[in-house]
Structures are given as structure tokens and as C-alpha cells.
Image (cartoon, rainbow, N blue to C red; front, side, top):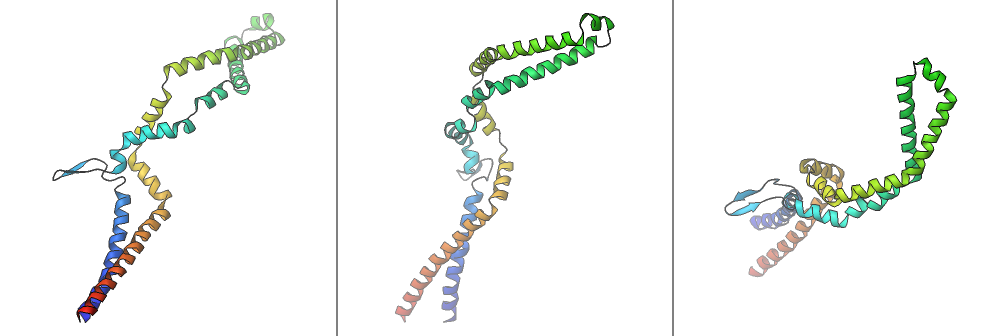
Length: 207
């Protein structure tokens, strides 16, 4: 009787343990092993490392437009506020250049007084702001022709450090991972109880 009782208790406990370890192992094998390991003709390789290229291509196709939109870049670059910022930066650079090159020259102060410098700077800024849209449009068209944004994004994804990515995922989803493992244990326990009930029924009928 005692061996039979021990068996009936052990079945659900072992099933629960197997369910827990299976869930933990399945999560572990998403990233491990990071390099292929060949054993007796079989190759062990983590799901994400082995499918890194395919995952990168899939992310570029599905999430790429949302992560990096050419139209958003165009709207930002062609925005007037962006143009004014560039014109202002150029204007400040001109001021610094004039002060460094001619600030200590009294002849420049006579030939080019402060008011004249101010008018020249204002004219320069006006010309820059007026010609900036056409210049930025030409620059953006050239960049779009020479830069493959999808390929660049794919390279960035492919260069991700899987060890660091795994660490981040484990930290940020620690609670969820524990729940998945506990769910595996709970399912294993349910299966084990069902098996124990079948064993108990068979033992009762045999006696």
C-alpha cells in the first residue's frame, strides 16, 4: 500500500517538475546555444541566433516603416524651423569667424562698422533661409539615392549583441517569464493528477 501511495504522490510532483523545467528550457533555448553545437549528427542552436538574418529581414519589412520613415525625415528636414536653425548656426559661425579674423583690426572697424556688419549678417540669413528649401531638397534627394535605408537598418539589427539583448529581455520580462514557468508547472501537475487517477483506478480494479 505504501509503495502505491508513494507512486501516486510522485506522479503529479514529477509531472509538475517536468512541466516547469520544460517551460524554462524552452525560454532558454530561444537564445542558447549562441553558436551551433553538433552532437551525434544533430545541431543544437538557439532559435534567435540561428534565425537572426531572417528575423532582421522580417523586422525591416514589417516594422521598418514605423521605426524609420523616410517621409518623416523629409518633413523634418524640409520644415522651416529646421531651416531657421541651420541659418542661425551659420550666422553664429560667421560672427565667430569675423571676430576671430578681424576683431582686433581697427581698419576693419572703420571700413565695416557694427551696423554694417549687422545688415550684412541679416542679409546673409535672409538669403540662406530663402535658398534653404531648394538646397535641402537637392541634398535629401542625393542622400536617398546613395543610402539604402532598409539595408542600413538590417545591418543595425544584425549587429545587435544577443547576450545583451537576452539580458535586457530577462530583466524587463522577469515576472512574465516566471509566470510562464509556473504555468508549465501547473499544467504538468494537472496532467500528473490525471495520470495518478488512472493508475489508482487500475490498481483498485486489479484488487
